[in-house]
Length: 528
Image (cartoon, rainbow, N blue to C red; front, top):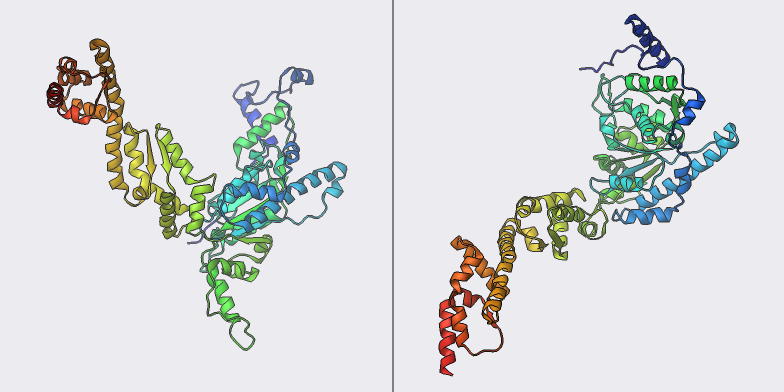
């Protein structure tokens, strides 16, 4: 079934819309529109209002003074490996800032000089899922002072069809810049899952509204075009513009130029390796062959040998892929890499679980052997760093449900917990019960202090004895004080018969058989 463009009339301009609203108000007998004031406030009246000082568009640019090596060192704190990608992004980011500064300085001097040629270093990141492509750009965004927008390529469709319009990316930059078009035109746009808009090879006759059409529209943005700051069907935006006109506020430009916007795209590109492998295999056949293709290279090695022709065969327009001159391959992560992510990365999933348990007052500690085992199991998932979440969620799902309702205050994650989570959880729950009894044992120690003060006979229970008393009191359904009073009711008489200067240390054997222990001690004392 062929997709058909949405048939819509051209919306009115803000001036036309304002006139229509005013006429409608007159017909309704309303002399003054609640949306518009006939006379904008005078300059004197505006001065009396305390408006916040306008933001300097160059302030964020001036603050950024990092070198490429410093940017990479920052990314190293969050992303393991991917040194090539870090270097490329670091250089691209610093070059972009330098270009922004230069463009602003030239614009102040001469508009003609400001239009000097600059070839943008738009970047394309390739690599399997879970290797840190998105996380790299997300971490880099924390350093960015210019507006930054992230989007998923799968939601876009060709203009006029159901789906998001790629021009919304540019308008989102304006929103991120608080409506400042001048700041927005030097922003950075990141598009993930870019491989999903490759033209489908099986489209025959019908329009490929989410493939070539989107590429064509993105091509215009990556090159240079004027994008309206408000969508034609954005009624709220039209009203906002009318309010600016009626209030006498400074009107922002109605369009934004994309000449200086930096684009970074990424994707897994499943199937690209087959195209590259076929080309390499065909090149290895014949008398002029220079390569023995019997030893199949790994996926990342194949990606590094991808050419523009391979991307075209994959489904990209030559003009589109040509606007992405900087190409870098992200390497797959092995078991050691996943372990380093858990151990060293500031964005480690372990920090998330520490915070989750910490919200319930539970401290959790991860042993190295547990981290190694999590990394090993995650590597078997074949989904890169995403496998860490899969394994951790499988292991700790019941722990996050059960432990917050116990009195357990801390536990250590061992390799046994990772391998046998259910079995180890039951042991922890029993330990939690003992932890609860430890809290109750404070009442037992209070009984010993009162006993010593009342009868002048120093006694003290060991910690294990105090826990045992708490357990027995709960089993009998009585309070700890009542249990102690009943079990040790004869101790003030028996202990007086025993000649002993130091305190009596009572352990769990005394708690289990208090009368028998007291009798044996009295008899033993008289036999001396």
